[in-house]
Length: 192
Picture 1 (tube, one colour):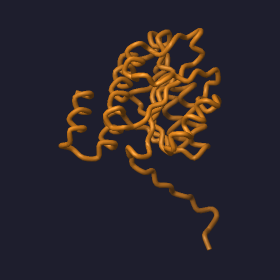
Picture 2: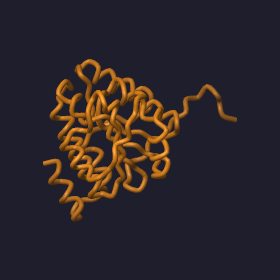
Picture 3: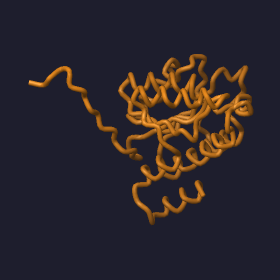
Picture 4: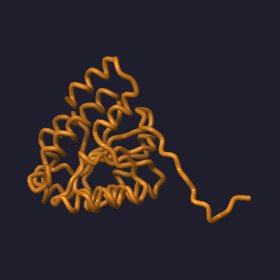
C-alpha cells in the first residue's frame, strides 16, 4: 500500500512537434513600447513563430482588448501569416471560449507560451492551462512585463505552480531533436 503522505513526482516530457502548440499572448503594438526588454521579447517571438512554421507546430495568438490596446505588432502579425488573433477581455486566455475551442481542436497537450505581460495574462493563462491538465513551457526570454520585478515574479510563480521555465533556444532544439536536417539549418538561421 502506498503511503498517502509520500510526495508524487511527475515527469515532464520533452517537447515534441506532434504534441506542442505555440501560444502567443497579447504581443500588441501599444503594449510593447512599455515592456521591459521589449526587443528581446519581439525578436524571440518572431523567431519562434517562424520556427513553428518550419517545424509544423500550430500557433494560437490572442489580443487583449484590441480596441484599446491595438492589434498584434505588425512584424509579428506578418510572421503569423494569416493566423487570426483571438480577442479577449479576460486576462487568462482560458477565460475566452473561442480560445478554449481552438486549443481543443488542435488536439495538443503541451503549450509553449510567449508574450506579455508575464505577471498578468501569461501567469493566469499558465495557471489555468496547468489546472486543465496541459504541460506548459514558458520561455523566459520571450515573455516580459512592464517592470523587471514583475517579469521575474511572474516566472517564479509559474514555475512554482508546475510550469517548465526555459528559453527560446532550449525549446527549439528540443523540437528539432536532431541536427543536420534541412529544418535544423533553417531554424538555426532564425536564432543566429
